[in-house]
Length: 231
Image (cartoon, one colour):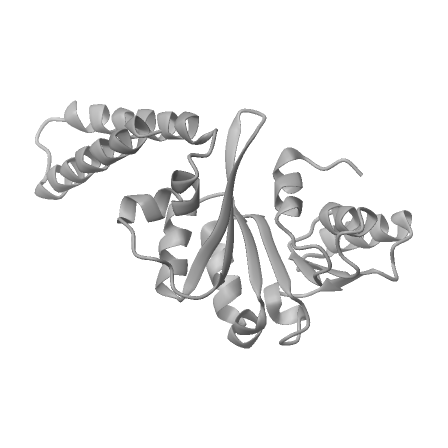
């Protein structure tokens, strides 16, 4: 089965031989790939909504992998028992949803050895939240697919080494390893901040709150440009 570049990168970060739960599995493409490639002996595909749940069931049955892939319907990690899996994949959902899923099932979250996260939004915020809740980032990747950048974050239990907040939000492993796509990704972030700044500067009679926001944007811009200069 051919995966999208985004899901292929997620699959590459799954330790061989691990038991995996793919939460929000949709068509169960990732579970089928992991089993067919001999990467995982058993995968649980989780879906909360009926239509994607049925689609996942159909895909697993079509692939002849019903003995290796179990499709379960339920909310987030609530479909799992503590210690049932080694790795949980939370991909293709917003950062807030990822946080909620991890918070709603604390016993399961505590028992999972590795989380592979691919937030569609709020990647910076989820990194800060993870560091404050005793998760350390062990690997990261950037993927470009159809003109969009996607971030993949691997975390395990432990303390994140101290680093500047801007480095933490951008991705400490991406920065440390000078990921080949990081400069292009930074260019997009810098242009976005510059556009917001120009828009704010064009307004008359800014409130004190907006002046403070402008100052924060200028500080962030300077830091982003500083990181880019080091790549």
